[in-house]
Length: 364
Ligand SMILES: Nc1ncnc2c1ncn2[C@@H]1O[C@H](COP(=O)(O)OP(=O)(O)O)[C@@H](O)[C@H]1O
Ligand SMILES: [Mg+2]
Image (spheres, rainbow, N blue to C red):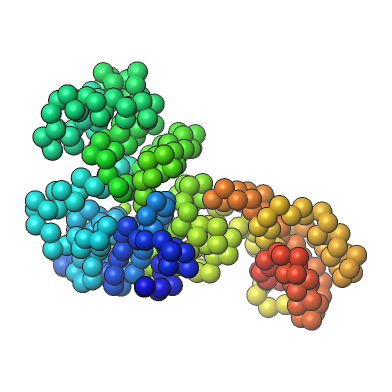
C-alpha cells in the first residue's frame, strides 16, 4: 500500500480504495513560440478515495486543470501513471478511452452548453453520442432533471436560464452516462455566493445518494470548506500539503496553504495587529497566540482559566467561529505578557484542554 504523505486520504487510505491514483506523474509542455518548456506537473503522488469528495486547491497556473485533464485522458502524462478505477489511462486507444470517459463526468466553469439545444437535449447529448435509443434517453434524462431541480425547465434554452440553472444542466449532462467519477473544474467560480451554495448542496446530495466520487478543483476556499472531505494543495506543479479538509484548514503547514486560507475567518490577524507584529520579542512586547477550538469548547471558561490558573492578563485581538467540513471550528487570537517559560506553560495548559495553539509573533 502506497502511504506517501501526499495521499488525500492519509491514514484512512489503508482501508479505502483509491478510485483515482496518480503515481509519480509529471507533465511537461514543449517549448513554443510563446514560451520555453513548461513543467506543469512535477512528481505528483495522489489518491482520491472512492466515494469521497476531494478538492485540489492552488493559485492560477499551479497545474490544477492539467491534473484533472489527465484523469479523463484529455492530456497524457510525460512520466508516471494515472490510474482510474484500476485502469492506466494513458496507453488507452481512442475506443477504450471513449468507453473509459463514459465512467467519468465533467463540469466546467462556463458550463459549455449548446445554445441551440433545450435543457433536455443538452443533458441527453452524451447518450445520443453513445447511440442510446431515444426511448431509453427519455427514461434516463427525465429523472436526472428531477434530481437537479430542472423538471419544469426541460424545454427551455440555455439563454433563458440563470447561471445556477445552467450549471445544473451541466451536472445532469455529466451524470447522463452514469459515471463513477465526477470531475469539476472551477464549476462554481462563475456563480454568485448564494447560487454557489445551492450547487454545492446538489453536489453533496449526488455524492451521498449516488455514491459518486467527486474531484473538484477550485481557487475558492469556501467551496472546499463546505463540501470537501479531503484536500490537496498544489503549487508550481507539486503537492505541497494534503489531508482531511478539517486538518489542513485548522492546522495549515505550508506557506501556500496559509496564504490561500487568508480569507477564511479567524485565519488572519486583524490589520491593526498585522501591521505591528514582529517575529522577535522586544523588551516590552506581548506574545500573540492563536488558539484553535476544534470541538464545542466555549471560549469564556478558557479565558477565565488563563487568568485564574495562570495569572495571565489576556487581550483578545480577534476571533471567529466557523464550520469546516461540517465540524465546528473556532479561533481566538490573544496577546499576553510573559517570558518563554510562561508562554510554554500557557501552551501546555491549553494543549491539555484539547486546544491547538500557535505563536504568531509579538506586539509591542
Ligand atoms: N496546452 C498547454 N500548452 C502549454 N502550456 C500549458 C498548456 N496547458 C497548461 N499550460 C501551462 O501549465 C501550467 C499549469 O496550467 P493549468 O493546469 O491550467 O493551471 P491552473 O488550472 O492551476 O490555473 C501553466 O503554466 C500553463 O501556462
Ligand atoms: Mg485551471
